[in-house]
Length: 92
Image (tube, rainbow, N blue to C red):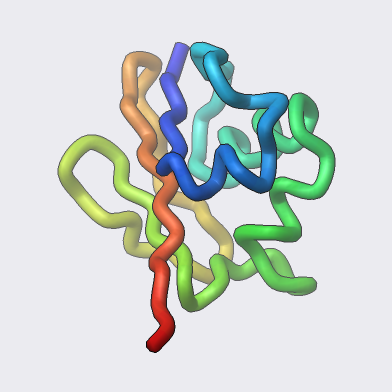
């Protein structure tokens, strides 16, 4: 199963995921996000826009590589993949 890790900031918006080991059955990044959505409704829309594209302020890494497909999230996941979902913070 792939493991999904979120940055601490995302846990503030989805506290039900805090302390959980997020192990998901997923063939693609889109599948992994759909599995997290089942555990935390609203998660998908928080990181993706209404067309399902990754929002500008969010990055996803599979292992050490940033995903290539920000439109459809079709990057493939190995069964033991490590997925890191990060939200950029900005402000002044």
